[in-house]
Length: 250
Image (cartoon, rainbow, N blue to C red; front, side, top):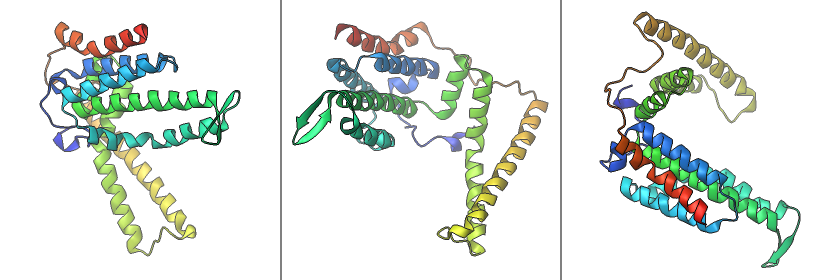
């Protein structure tokens, strides 16, 4: 779990959000997302307020808008789906620029775009201000079932090793004349995937047994026993409480 396994979304900045314990940031992001999801799609001013809150949090965390915009492109497939809804929807229709659009489809498209974008941006801000190891520690402190944190821990620790194994196997296939453009050679790729799965499974078993023999109990060893203070929980509650206030007032 060393520094070599830092995920590419984490930004090494010194900001008030970076210094908050991970469990309070996870809880705040989850509660904010829940408020966004349960907000009726017709409350346009509430969504504008949520976007303003995201902008404020990004400024406090020193995360550039361009960085967020580039990585938010992960929701592009959902955007394409949303753009199709006004044409495929049923019920009342309106004419706009010669196009017949469904009113319910327009609301559905707006609902997907607004809530999906806000959720992605909130998740990106969480990832940008919290390292992967701290995220797992935060989940552990929030009493997430240990089986999930164990799986995430092993995945984080050995993801680079699996990627390197896959790269070496690909080079070996290419050196033997494998060409991925030929459909009849897909068997070699399938065999390679199966071999990688079996190798990973066996390695995981060996590592887990070795860790158990050294006293591993299923939870991460904490480098620090410092827990989030009441003030830190109160600071993190600002975002979901502000979002809830906007939902009620609008």
